[in-house]
Structure formats: C-alpha cells, structure tokens
Length: 150
Ligand SMILES: [Zn+2]
Image (cartoon, rainbow, N blue to C red; front, side, top):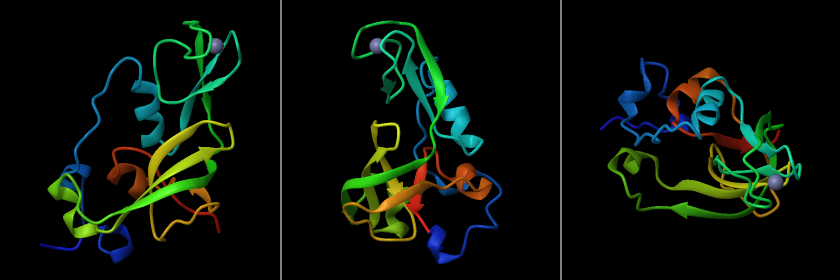
C-alpha cells in the first residue's frame, strides 16, 4: 500500500479526503460550526454568553453554569502540549501506514484543552503548537491537526 503520511511527501495526488479512508466525525447541529470552521482552516470554540467561559468540545449547554446561550469564537489556533501518546497500533486500518501517530492533549491559549494529532514531529510536554491551516491539510484530516510552532 502506498505510504499516506503527510510527512512522507505523498499527498498531492489525492483528489478528495475519501481516498484516505479516515473515519469521519458524525455531524450534528452542535458541532456543525466546528466542523465547517476546520474545513476553512479555523478552530472554532464556543463561549458562554452568561459566564463568559470558553467551551470545548461543542455542546448545547455551558458545562459551568448550564446556560444555553452560547456563541462561537475563533481560536488563535495556538496552544501547548501538556501530554501526548505515540500510537503504534491504531484502531482503524486507515492509519496503519502512518504510525506512530502523535496524539496530544493541547491546552489552547483560550484555556480549553483538546486532543489532536501533531504532524511532522514527536511532541514533547510544553511544546508550543499551532493549528495547521493549509487547505491540503484541512481537506485531508477530518478534525483539526497541529504542528510545532516555528
Ligand atoms: Zn456559562
């Protein structure tokens, strides 16, 4: 099978994301803005209009004060790795040619944490990372991915 890793240099001849066979997120009214934002190279977060706290992952109510008055904000896309794992045995065959996959817990500048892939480097605790926003990346990966800050 052809190597699929973005760091392998073989990614330009794939016309659409389906070629990678990645499992796709289930779209819902709660996460549609988040998923659409990623396809435009943006990381969208919710923010509570009552208590003003940022919220991740997308949901219908604030987990801090239970308000349903939420708005969307665009994250800076900057964050810091607080923990990570190198996955050598993925749970889906579409990832088999890309191991090890670096999956990191990233605390964003806004203060919320998410799990995301880090491309092109082995993460380390404290590593500064940025959202990868190139269209070939956003069209390939179903969810936001990061790379080390340069
Ligand atoms: Zn709130």
